[in-house]
Image (cartoon, rainbow, N blue to C red; front, side, top):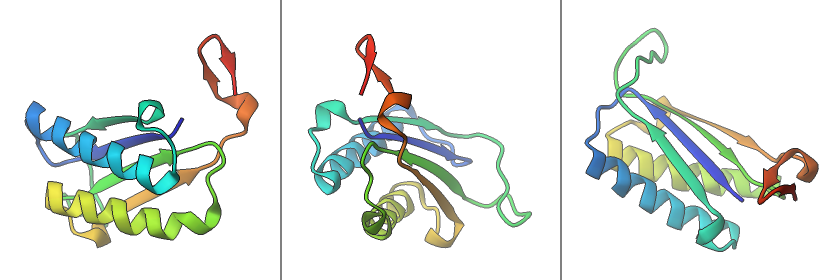
Amino acid sequence: MPYLLINTNQKLSEAQEKAVLGRCSEALANMLGKPERYVMASIESGISMLFGGDDGPCAYLEMKSLGLAEEKTADLSQTLCGLISEALAVPPERIYIEFSNPQRHMWGWNNSTF
C-alpha cells in the first residue's frame, strides 16, 4: 500500500504528470518489493511554493508505506530525487521528502484495515 504524493510549483501537462507518476509507481514497487497494483501515486503541479524564500523550481514529496524500513529511506530518497530532478527540472537540493510508516490499524483499505 505505498502512497506517494508529489507537490511541485513546476507546471506540467496531463501527459507529463502521467509519465512522472508511472515512473515513480514502478520505481517504488521495485524498491519496496511490493506489487505495483498496490502502489498509489498522485501529483499536484503548478502550485504556489517557496523553498528558502525563493519561488524557483521545488518539490515536496510524502511517501507512506506499511512496514517501511528506516534503512531503505536513503536509497528511496536518492531514487525519488533523481526521478523528480530529471522529470521536473527540480534540483535535488530543492526537494524535501517526508517518509512515513503508519501503523497497520491506521490504514484502511477494502472495507477494513491492514
